Length: 235
Ligand code: DC
Image (cartoon, rainbow, N blue to C red; front, side, top):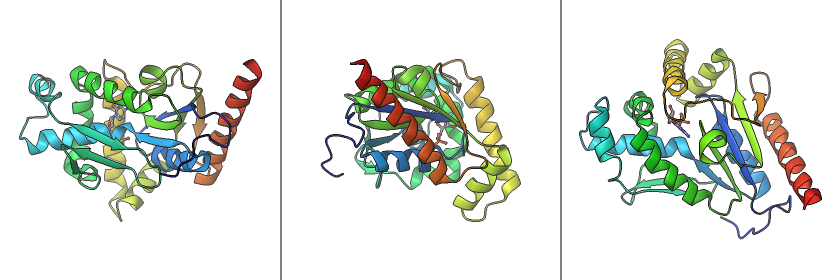
């Protein structure tokens, strides 16, 4: 990415956490905010998808919690953080395209409910966030991964809007079955014992149902501006 070393907000260490349900627009929004502010970008969902892709390729039964837990430490997962061209590799192989496949999408929620998987990825996520200067999207960023984030957003959208957007992204997939699959993932992601999807303490709820992408990005950029000017005044 570019050699920007201070953000336009004068807060090179800023961390913006964007959590929310599947299909609420987290990725486009987070990438847009990061690009606008000259920040890095981390898609933690891609990390869960990458480990799931690897488990499927290795022939591990993804419903077998003990087998998934035992294998969780084996693959090397590396996330590229350029918001204009995010990458993810598993043992050196770029799997950015493969992790969006239906087989991975169907298996990723049970895999991400396994505590050993979460512990492994939590360590990697915190290492990438490091000194900050990043927009991080996921389900538990503001609650567990980086509760000290200067800006925390909980992004939501009505199920109909989410299904329509996701089906369009996937190129004309059936909206009803897309909605069913989104809601099934929501149920597992919100109901699991370890780090469930929840609105973090201090998070601002942004409902994107009736807002354009640019409007949602503007809202988060404004929150970031407020957080960084508050921090400067307080320092
Ligand atoms: O954002 P996504 O749809 O690509 O995420 C894929 C799955 O990964 C999602 O169903 C739940 C899981 N996930 C998670 O448990 N915690 C995160 N921080 C990010 C994603």
